[in-house]
Length: 265
Image (cartoon, rainbow, N blue to C red):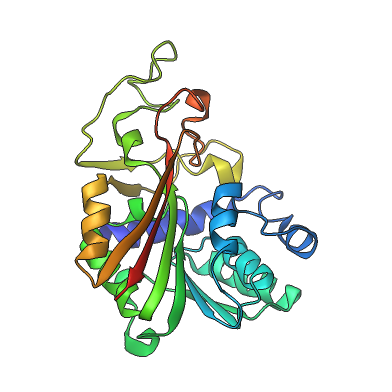
């Protein structure tokens, strides 16, 4: 396992151990009572148009499992398989699947290391906010994703827009609240390391183990998909934030999030 991924695994497991009691507490209730919870409307609309009934769905970097559980239940899929690097999050997701009696299994795995046991298993793949940044090489990442997809399988990615690569968010040294749309970083390449924890999960500030992540331009995302036997079939861009870092500039005309769709040839 790459050294930075080992570090991220430890940091994510630490964050989950320190999670606020509210984190994940609403999963069972919302999935039982809502239609496609945990997806923004535009993503839910895309998923509703896909024939998921009886299909096998894969979710890479599934966090606590809530999106996959939501999709498998509402889309009447036959099975869902989620992968995440944090073992404690995976254990939590498996408990929720059992509690809700939804046919999902979750595996603790570094995506780069997923073996051929999942070769050509998935009819549909989803990737949701905050996944792509944890990998230094998107061509390598999408090679594994494509390996796990059947011929004709669909992929739907709902992610942060690469435009945000250039922006600073609150808490960063260069952040200026008077100039929130100001370019501080390279659009093309930037490696980040930090010990500021995962506030959205813990609701507390703490000196965390080191997180390492990477920004990627749109060209790397598109090339990673197209270099691995897939084609782009759709792209939507939105002026609202999914990451929690840029909500103060929602709806002023900047591309902040996107839905990218593709198909394996």
